[in-house]
Image 1 (tube, one colour):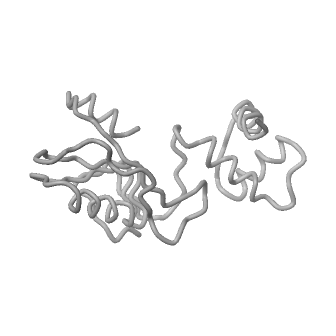
Image 2: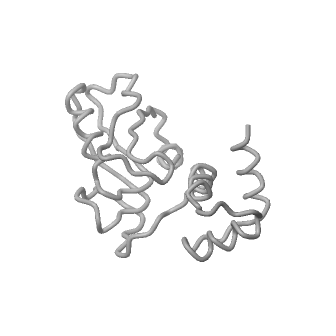
Length: 157
């Protein structure tokens, strides 16, 4: 999502993507893996590699290696919305540097993240009010009842 917004803002019409998984919901996998490799050729191009968050830096390291192995690029730069101090990778550009680690819920991942938090609650809450209370107490997340209802409805389909 951030790359699409940046592409539009910079009037750059050449946009492609590939998928790297490091988290599945709120569960961190031991290593970042390329799920879907880059499909279009970008050889000879200047690349701005964009992600929403740079947490450990593993995703950027895997992405850079993927690009360098399969493409002859003129230049690779990196950009991220949130750069966490815990990262081993330092992006070229970032909107915010976070000194204190915390979970960030982006609009494009809210349903996935919240549904995972709800699944992990033990014992399972018996009401939406209880879910809201636990999310607030344990995670510092304030969420509207309607959004929880939507998330629960989607997870039952």
